[in-house]
Image (cartoon, rainbow, N blue to C red; front, side):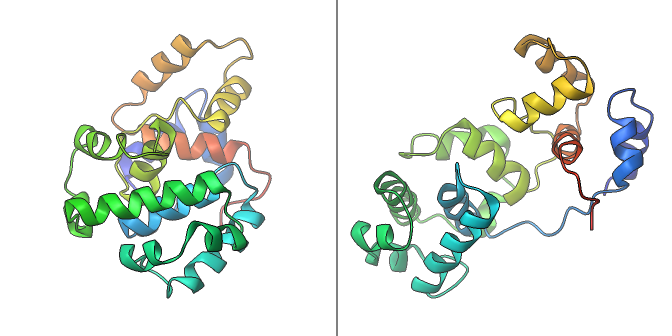
Amino acid sequence: MDEAAFARFSSCEYLGPVVARFGPLEMGQPEEPLTCLVSSLVSQQLSVKAAATIWARVAERIGGEPVDPERLLDVSPDELRTLGLSRQKARYVHAVAQAWLDHNWRADDWFSMPDDEVRARLLPITGVGPWTVDMFLIFGLHHPDVWPLGDLGIQNGLKRLVRPDLTAGDMAELGERWQPHRSLAARYIWKSLDNTPVS
């Protein structure tokens, strides 16, 4: 974890109490990009438990991780539905796998790519929206300065930490004060909604 960012947030009037409660956040290792993106699409709008169960089924069916795009495309939409995906999600994960093959994308290329280029590559893919890309940048690639204002948890967390009547403009301004460490700020905001300590 970035020590300068930790010290900065420790003294922040809004994030300071959260930092004091949870301490330094372990960032873990960046995830394999295609696996991260597909698992994120599978998990959208599901509880953590349900998402983990369905993703385990999908991963087992395609031969485990990291995701091989050809193996994923070999699984029909109907079979993906039997594994727990909706018809729409089956279409989305196939669209991502097809884009990986069409563009011959390689995992190592993503980690040195600027945010704007990542967005330009991913947003044209069916089913991949701004929220998905933000999660991919933060959790998959560990980009340090992503501010996911489209995330409901961030919105709710900010209203709890700052004040209930925050507007979208207020939230954007708060993000500016936390540059260039907004991804870490977001992680602390999510943790502020958690009733369990960081492991």
